[in-house]
Image (cartoon, rainbow, N blue to C red; front, side, top):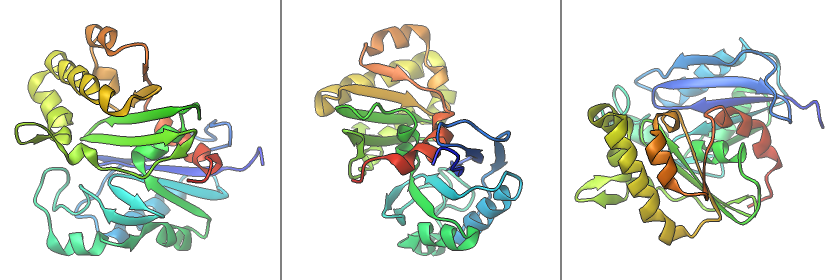
Length: 252
């Protein structure tokens, strides 16, 4: 239905953003953002989402995008929420155990009393921008590197290749994540983004690559010119717009 409202929640390493949107992706109130609380057991994230919802218009359904490997709404692995104080801090074994196999989709649905959809955050981001034509790859640049792949508009099985080594002992996450952008500055960091794109192109042979996330805006003009016509920079707002559009994706 055209007037179906979706509560879209984008859970990041540093902040949790939410908005209520109609099926066209139009927000019906100013988006809300709160810092990601740490330590963060699953129940606290669910409670945080529920609290945010009280500050927004009532919705008919909820979409949550969160980092890590999510299968059918169940957390296989999440990289940040198992740590003591956030990205790149010490992993807490008790949190790692609590998040493993946690049915986030069922928990959110029960807590909010709404139909729920929980996906990897890059998959939700992609839902907001893909054209549903050919092979489309999405990468998000932020705390680390988020990734999603779509074929004919269908979400492909998620791969955490952001954790694969890209150079020496550095993973993709470490190579172009936020700490390295701060250390190198936008110019040198942008060269790394180009290196990553050039290295992935012969692996995926995508029809289109979308680059989003909060740090996409930090890519320098000279680096943008080198990325190629098959690469599109998309706004970070896609992470929320995708929450509304994810419900209409073809079944995987």
